[in-house]
Length: 315
Image (cartoon, rainbow, N blue to C red; front, side, top):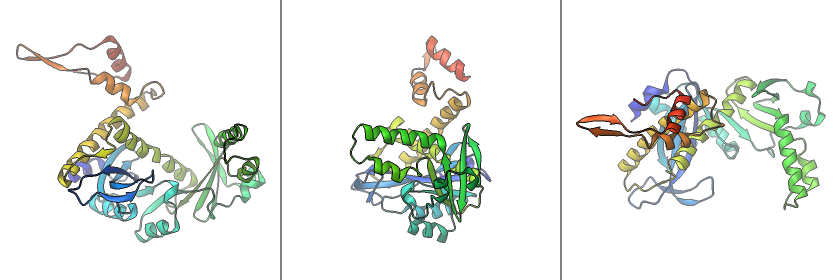
């Protein structure tokens, strides 16, 4: 399985690591251990660690670790197993604690980790002036300007579009009398709306850092394929060999789903169709045998039009 995955790792691509937990209540395994997941569920679970290749835009590696194993210790062993190069760990805000940063540094791993807006490392002084001259500069992302300034190893990004949306939503919550939303709370947060705070040791430019951070959504998409499209958010395997085989088949399935996803993205059709739509069309296409000869089954006009738009050919 590792040899198979090595074929897709490539040479100098940036690999982003992240993990997710899967419930596994088998009483015949030792790898499923109680441990909190993102939903604060203290169930027997396994942790699934994933690596994503940015340039080829596909998941390339996975590893199963025990449910009570910290991601960081598993990251380093995974790098050793595959010989991955240019590895960057990108995690969510809940990962940004001092102990985690120390562990990443001790492990010699590069990271891009967002911080919560109440972090003591978040200096809002330049945001409060409202003067863009206080910033280091800007770059364009999805046709909107992202302003930024750097303080040590912390980069603060300011997105005016995001700020407007967040302010609007907060004020709507006040107007709708939603508990916890007050004008005092709005005024307290007014300089933090629209901001993204990232701590990093990669030495990359703010623009490179921001783009890599945004790529984290790709791994989240992989987990979404696994848990929702493939409906594999739980494992019912009863031994570790079966668990490994189950995870490997899921990995190949995710890679295939990503091929479909990238086709839709390249054709700029993601706003119109999803991978689930594509699978819904493909699963009704069969090969049938007549007089010892395999023939393609009937394909509806709608499916033919769909495949034609994607330049996919069923032969």
